[in-house]
Amino acid sequence: MSQNSHAHQAGPQSLWTADDVAAYLRCSKRHVANLCKAGLPHFYLGRLRRFRQDQLEAFLARRPRLDLRNNPQLNALGTAGHSREVRS
Image 1: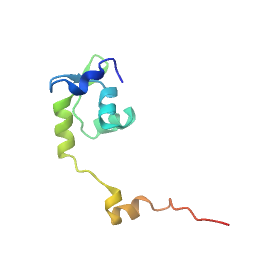
Image 2: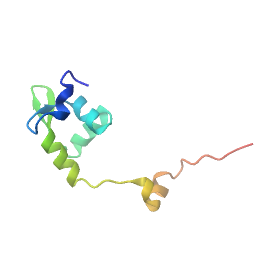
Image 3: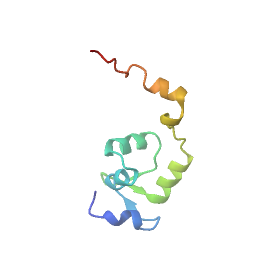
Image 4: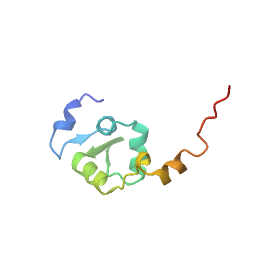
């Protein structure tokens, strides 16, 4: 995480790095980049990508979440071809 590790406790106007967002979401920086492609609001300060906490939380609130564990139909699709056959 960046040196500004207190970003999660700061106000809605604080600027977060991709590392801060990844730590907050408990995901990789690659996933954060994919979320940016999917519409996660961000902007650049020079070459550095920055995020605002209030925009991140608004994005997450309006984004539907798929939970494969609780949806048998989606779970069957998501695990197709990944089952292991036990051999003796």
